[in-house]
Length: 272
Length: 272
DNA sequence: GTCTATATATAGATAGAC
DNA sequence: GTCTATCTATATATAGAC
Image (cartoon, rainbow over all chains, first blue to last red; front, side, top):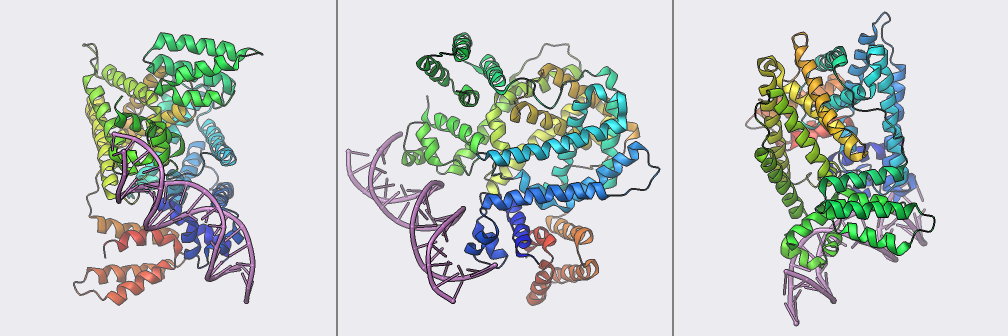
């Protein structure tokens, strides 16, 4: 077999058991019967092999789902259910990939990787959106984003049972159960107000960072009024062309004293 | 403030951003204004502080939910929804904890930690089970485990929106939406076959390991028949009091040639 | 493309002085 | 309870011979 592919197979295996950071290049190389040094002739870094695994999985999945041919004459619902069953079976067969993704992740300071992940996720989201619209049509439209969320949430939770806990579950039954649950929600939907309005945010990232900080102050601050005032002055000052650096800094430092605001403040600081 | 508590707060912060393994004790200590050496006067290891954080969160959560007093005269459904809303708000307020748990995890070779996690998860599961039974009564009973799974799946997926993507979502609306979705599923439940039969497995871990391996051979093996035969002989031999070590070993090695069986085989090997 | 040897860095944890 | 210095282990990645 191709050494490169062999390395990737072993890598998925170790990543799925120990997580990305706890797996060494040495282990992967050794499992494939080569030295650590030789590994770097095939991949330029440990992150490199991880990215290649992600890409390959995504390509395989897309190819599989597109090339699947179901008997003709199926209703939309039956077709949807067949695709779901295929996805469930595929996920269980590739359980190591699933485990790898849900364990440790090398994505957190690598923008390239984050973009890749975002992209893969979006692709799945859009796919599900159109599948559900095909089945439920206009009745699903007003709350399609909520329906997609419910669908993905239920699916994922059963994946945990199937994969993390190795539970023996009848997959045909599971597919029917999930679709039947969606049926129920859609049939009931006139009585339900929707929650989500779309998958992509329409406000700017800076605006969002402001909103997040304001919300967090309102919810958790020990000195709500003072912190809100500081926040408003900060927002005003930062909007100015000739913002005073010392003032911005002072207000940030002041707010940083409240530990619960740390995450929101670091996000905001990226825009300075 | 208590230095110990201060260290824990900073630890959650770093763990939530960079993950457990990517955060050094040095960073945590420095953020709290002490040296790395001094850290070890407060906690005996990095894992130690992680466990303490988990325990504290669980205690706080239990206390909060028990001490919450809602107005009297609420219906079961209203009461359930109020508790859900409280949990949503609490989760968003403690988003760093949520991020920490869903990022990197130090649990994978530490049995003590795995037990703790299992315990915390079970506690939540049982809590949800009884809450749902209170609201839906006998109608939910036949498929209560599926209902709990659906409930937790939907909730978790929205938490991802709220926390990872910082989406502004009306929490009151969200709580109503989730409960309404559960209403719909329960009302529709006569027409739905259930999937799960319980949360705890009734067969022994060894038996389960056998089942897993057999299933995996059937689903993924490139030489189904040969591998199944090897599997059956292995199972038979291992059951014997005077099992031949060389035969067990040989059969294991033979099966190991099929890479897709690696996970199941390592699980099984623990019983030898 | 593979090896061994090595550069370089950083981690968790401990020792001993104050 | 805090510091600095140090131990020990292990990691990613590279260099250079074959």
